[in-house]
Image (cartoon, rainbow, N blue to C red):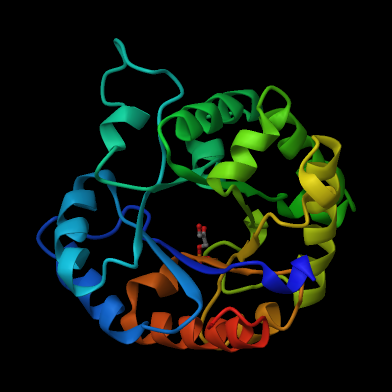
Amino acid sequence: MIREMREVIVAANWKMHTTPADAGELARAIAGRTRVAGVTRVICPPFVCLATVGDALLELDPDIGIGAQNVHHELQGAYTGEVSAAMLAGLASWVIIGHSERRRDAGETDELLGRKLGRAVDAGLRPILCVGEQLDEREAGQQSAVVRRQLRGALHDRDPAKLAGIGLVVAYEPVWAIGTGRTATGADAAAMAVVIRDTLGEFGFARRGETIPVLYGGSVTSAAIGEFMAEPSIDGALVGGASLKPDEMAGIVARAGVTAVARGLTG
Ligand code: 13P
């Protein structure tokens, strides 16, 4: 059954933490603690640490994917301080798109995120598209409508075959759970995975988006991950604060590995 074959992914979003002086050591520490069969691992350091992390992992653990936390929506041009998809080639193979902190701080709209998705695909970067509602939206019962609107806004001009081909991942990150120590429940995340796959289905993703991995993000720790990995519709986590702690990453990836075994991904 396709659902059981879906990849299991743990992605670390280091946000605005680490420097080129210390990122390599952290990457090596995480690599040494997270070699678990069947789990796809990704580390997304700040732009300026991509090369250091890449060098640190080149021989030690080339299986760890390296991702950027953002990419510009234009190909090139007069955009001071920005980073294009082509600039990331060779430094990253993944990219986070639409993180709520960028929607909040950089005013990124769903339409803009759609363009970023296009740039990522064209440059061969595997996108992790983030969606998720604010607290007031959840309290008003609007979480499904918000996530549908975000997905529709980002995907309406995109080619689903290309996005599926490159391995689109969607991360459900309820904004009220990010950095707050308050997680959603496994049931909340599973319900949203249904909404996400159903919406992907509108865009012609095969089998109502059944093959697209859906991650949960928001205060994930080694203690909290089990609840999410126990949900068959959830395929892993996008981890913020805890991803800076090798012990925490070890626990999170180990628990993801249990799901990978159960799905028969360990060969
Ligand atoms: P925290 O794990 O720190 O809550 O952050 C989640 C997140 O935003 C990952 O992208």
